[in-house]
Image (cartoon, rainbow over all chains, first blue to last red; front, side):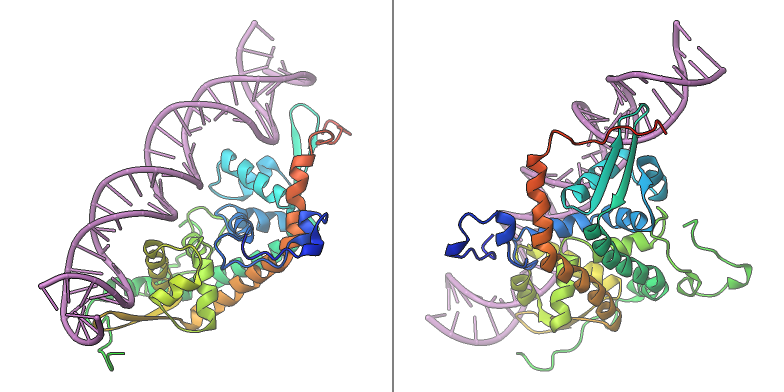
Length: 148
Length: 148
DNA sequence: TACAAAAATGTAGGTACTTACTAAAAATAA
DNA sequence: TTATTTTTAGTAAGTACCTACATTTTTGTA
């Protein structure tokens, strides 16, 4: 928390109002938690799917390939706590719960989707490097030019 | 790998040339690995720091708060294998290794930095939701309007 | 009288991530 | 001679993540 400045005149002001811009390079900054939630294995995919439209829990589970119920529920809780996802549960049996993005979540999802899109379209270029790894071995390192 | 189409006339063509656009929502797509590397706990921060300029190993370690040597080395290896990071080792004692971004890595870093910047500037808005979590409890769920 | 439905929750167990610590190498400074 | 420097590999140990399975609820259906 050493990255957050708290001025003397901020007494009485809610903690949220005091928070300065986060600094991800500082180990103790709370923004690290947000980054963790947004870039988690399933967080990224959930944001992308929810950006398209509202989903029910099991719809979401089908849309995101390979996610377990446990992890999906946990991921959604994190995103909800960060104000990214809105959860609306209808008190009926069987349960009916709808998940959608908040305005905040929509901003985040856009950034995440840009990255995801880039990965998907760049995959061929990236995959080209995977083969090199095996072919390497000989001239791996450069010769020393000057001993620093 | 069911998301990758291989046409009959692609025999003999290197695997990298055959790779179609990735699909992150498919559980078996190799793009999932790239996403994992780029959005890993330290991968994001390394990309952001390297986007500014080339760094030596220990410079990088100091710049990225909280990373251990082990994890930094591992993260750099992953990014190097994906063609994001260029590693130049001078054969001197003590060792001197320089890490920088490839053109591919620079593209990825830009996307990642946009997300990171958004998180840092949005932290106050996000933090506002963290307090709600405790204050909740009463009217958590909506009343059923229609039983589906 | 079972059984299925939807969304979680709880637990046990395994896997993967992380850290801390040790080791290496050769030249230079003390 | 000993300590220091820089980067990385290796190991053991701890922690966190993740999956699989069982459980819950109540209405409607076979």
